[in-house]
Image 1: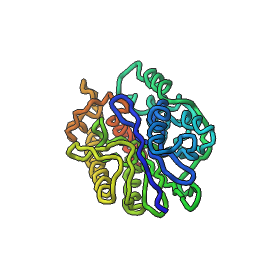
Image 2: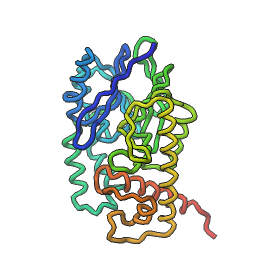
Image 3: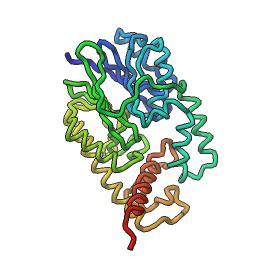
Image 4: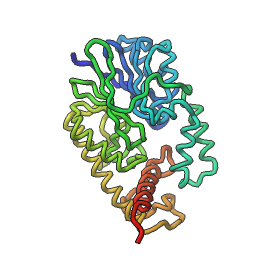
Length: 317
């Protein structure tokens, strides 16, 4: 059977947050937006489809960022705590603890933003938009198959890179794949692709292109082409291949600029992109690097960690 998929959009500041309703015998929602999303976005949209949010039985989380897991506890509550909440074990701490989001900030992008109040701002954001800390009901690693009732199954595929625990969910038999933020193209509203581990991100894109080969690709945000024009969040087979190829091309350009910068050595400057200003210049990037989630510094820190690992692995004379 072909399982209908319906996008559910919820407002959040300058963003629209996208979730997807999988109309299976045991209905699923992929990603949950923020705390207000289930009541203000999902429930009315489902009612317009003649569906009830109380009947959702699966909550499938593609990764642990606040705009994807923030509404998980609230949605789980609206289902009478009957839905199974699924997340990769590597990102599960982000669902269990608001503090994990603060720790992620201070360990990576916060090191470059020079904001003494940065950690406190992240904590305030998590208090505002994460509906509750919770233990997932099912942890995955990739390779699992979830039964959504009848003959509908969803396979889980590890897609690390954007986060360590990013996953794709594929509706078996119809090549419909939900990737959250694992396909960044040229970035979303902040105009830069964001990933914590560049090598893993590149490998995941190749796996998606060569192994999963989606005919229907569902993105977490309207990511942008090289000309700045955004895709929608529902891509057909041709658009999916283009978005994946553009993502690889963009990552290649960023790799070259970042590695040139790292090989030259850090030079602290007044630039808002310091100490990665040469990389921003080489890429022609002039976006605001302080806007959360600050994909510029997230990715640059990923390249720095990769570069440092390579340097430590080199044999000494």
